[in-house]
Length: 255
Image (cartoon, rainbow, N blue to C red; front, side):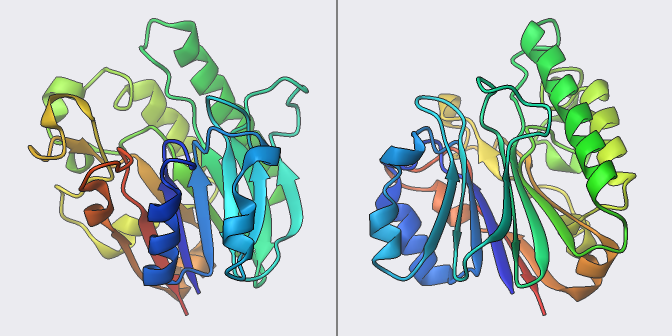
C-alpha cells in the first residue's frame, strides 16, 4: 500500500503535475492539502476519467483538503467534531484497505505574537482530543499532511535562525509531542535519521535553489503501521521547475 501527501498550493494550476505524479508514482491514496477550490469546482472529472475516486473538503482561495484514491473511501469525515459551519476546511478522514487515514492542513500561525498562532495551537489541541477519543495505539492509523511544524534541528536548514519563530517554536513542538504521545511515530524518522531532508522551500529568496528548506510535511503512524512500513521518502524533484508548488510530496510504502 502506497500513501502520499502533498500540499499542492492550489490544485487547478497544478492539475497536470498531479496527474503526472499519479501516473508515475501510482499511490493507492494521495492526500492533497491547500486545494483552494470549492468542492463543486474541483476538477474531479479529470481524475475520475482515469479511474480514480475523489473526496474533497474545499473552500475558495484558501485551505481545503482532498483524497484521490484507487478504492472508494469509507466512513468519510470532514472537519473537526466541534467545527462550525463557517470553519476553515482543514481535515478529511477516510478508511482505505482497512487503514484509517486522516489528512490535515494545520494552520500556518503567521507569527507567535498573532491571533493566528493562538488559533493554530487551539486547532492542534482539538485535533489531539478528536484522535484521543476515536483511536487507540493498536489501530491502523495514518495521520499525515502539512503540519506547518518542523520537528527538530535536523528538519531546519538553519535552526538557530528559525528557533522561536513560527514553524519552529517550543509551543508548536509541545503540541506535536502531544499528538505523538497518542502512540504516533514520525515515519520518515523511522527510516531516516540524518538531517538535511526538507519538504518545503520558500518561493522567496531562491529557497529551493539554495536548499533553505524545512521538513513540515509529516506522516505520523501507529506502531502497527510503522511495523508494516517499507519506506518513507520525500519526492523533492516535484519542487523543481516552472509552476511547482512550494512543497514536495512525501510518500510512504506499507506491505
